[in-house]
Image (cartoon, rainbow, N blue to C red; front, side, top):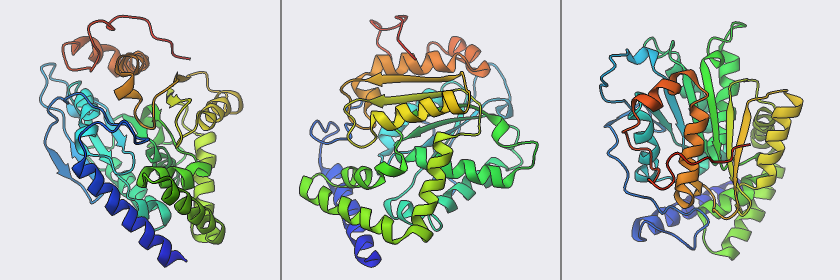
Length: 330
């Protein structure tokens, strides 16, 4: 069963990669819509591991040492192309932040102890490096990157003392189309496959897999889901979601927001809901509203209060017509 499912996922991932390589940039018929504007040139990258890539901000005029500027954890969606991520990388690096991009592959999701938890450990080890350990952290996650963030949080909690020397550095948490445990089967099937029949087949197979593999797999998803709904980090949070997202449902985001506000007592949990954008496509379909909401959220964080003003001439992907308009953020 496991061997057959691994083979099916590997084949699906290969088919998806081939499809993305041969289709133009815009995919109006696919659930994840990547209609991007030309991205600003992102800085060169340094490979930290097979899943981690670091891109450093160019030298900026204010002379502020890099150790005083935040590090952005950019937690990628499944099978993301670098050119799509570069829009976000450029936005942050042009404002003085280095960006650590974290990727996860389908099989690494399916085997947490050998995949996502190993990645989480690598991330935490990087954050504890001598040249990084004093820097503040901003988290910007997409889709399954939200699940990966829960694994990272668990590793942080296990690695730090009662002084919370790692989690206390987190200054902001952004969730774009976060996928919860209950959405893993449908999320992976829709992310990897286009054919509805194949999606259904893979969905059923993954459901069976999760039932059969409770001890080595499912229990870890449940722990991560618990962290997602009861995040121990009190830093401000922002959720982007859509009412037509078939992969990461609006209901899951709304339940997480309610839990953080009511059960955890956080008053700094915000959200922006869209009516018609597909999975991980809110920035591309509603670019102005997305970026204005993001910047409004960042303005609540001390470093970005000055950085956004100081680097207002830098690319922000917001059109002139939208600039300065009020956007709703709840």
